[in-house]
Image 1 (tube, rainbow, N blue to C red):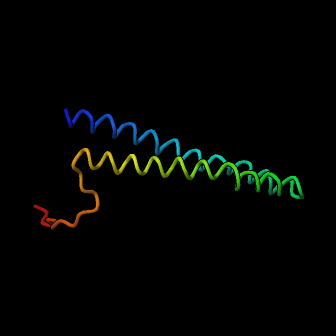
Image 2: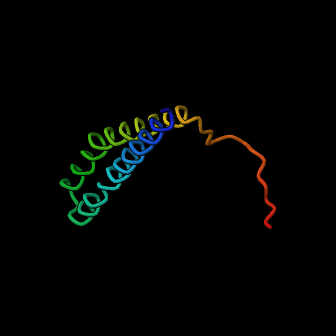
Length: 90
């Protein structure tokens, strides 16, 4: 049962991180447009993205990372543990 919960949570985590990644990448197009048009309109566009849009994107990414940490805890995974690595190749 715990393994099923872990698999489901891991899929949800993957979706959340993908959405957060693409939401963070999405403003590249408006920034390029702002560079092209220049002036006060470009400034207004960049300020809007910085003050309104990125706040939500950073919050969404933080929630996704927290969900991933909870997923690792539920699955009993230790992503940052130090283990002896066997380098013998036979």
